[in-house]
Image: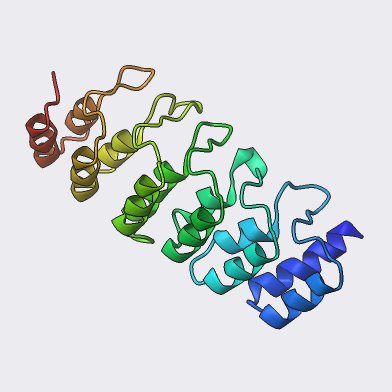
Amino acid sequence: MFTQDFDDLSKAVAEKDIERITELLDGGLNVDIQPEDTPVTVLILACSYPGYEEVVSLLISREADVNFRGKEGKTPLMWAASNSYGSTKLLLENGADVKAKADDGMTAFIQATLGVQSKRVTTDVLDLMLEKGADINASTTGKNIAGWTALLFATVNGDEDLVDYLLRHGAFVNHTSDEGQSALALARQEKYESLIQLLKKHGALD
């Protein structure tokens, strides 16, 4: 029964069918209903894609849990941060925890920087999250990425503009991962000459 109810609601959400979503919720369906086999809510689904801001707004207005921890401990904000400025703003304005961490230590801020790198969002999302108290130096704990910060991810991916943004907003230039990798070491490993110079300009040490 629960799975069918979830399927009905998730279908309406996927189709952005505001009328149907409202009808289902008015009929008594729990906005935070989950399928039997996976910890996920329709708010997480709506936050996983751009263009669903109206749906996200409706679900929040119907008291969807903005801090629900889904698969691997990821919250709606972690999904929205790399996909939609509008959904991110709605969540933060309605109590989403900007400092929450997933099971692997991933934060919404790091997710947002990955969204910037893939051009799905801009640094406006980062501005918004920093204003709400996001930790620019938070680090992950997952296998192979233990101790990685937003700066290390941006560096290894060669995103000079993002690296510059992070450094100007307080990223620790000499932070090292649990394996001892610094941003400067990563830039050298990838042979990013201009990034090497940028990092040194901001005080990176050999």
